[in-house]
Amino acid sequence: NNPTVFDSLDNSGQTVVDQTVLSVAANNPDWTHTSVNCNSGDKIYVDYKADGFWNVGTELAKCDADGTMATCYDGSVNKIGYMVGKLGATQFYMGKAQQMYLAPTGQAGELLIANYDKGDPESTDSKVRKHYKKQKGTIDVRIVVVR
Figure 1: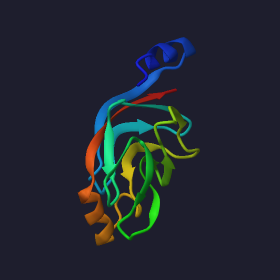
Figure 2 (figure 1 turned 90 degrees about the horizontal axis):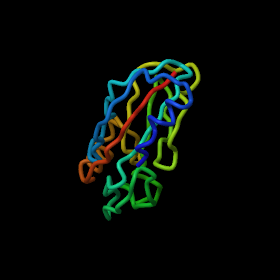
Figure 3 (figure 1 turned 45 degrees about the vertical axis):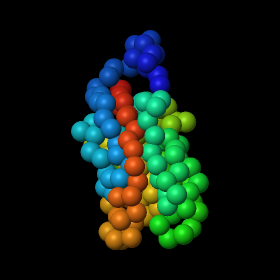
């Protein structure tokens, strides 16, 4: 979506310290390891491929990394299908509308990302895990960490 991100970073005087491009599957009930490591205070830029979509919810509603309102595994209607991140012990929203993030204060380590469905990634609830397995699609993600 944002092919000029590196130009913007060059002009800002920031240094790229880590980067990767990977696909996140909607049906993965666990966190996707990015192999991108962050220090507390790093800036994390995230860019999503414009044609990446997930199908989520019991009716398999189509959505991008910002998610959508859909019927969940338990019959409730909630916003699901959005991209979330985890750094250290902190989980945070990473939807498509957000193009730059600040790593949560005091947190460092490998950045993990996932499709959020009600119940959170790595839930041990068998109903949650079974519902993730019904999801379809992937979203391509570029992650750039700067200091």
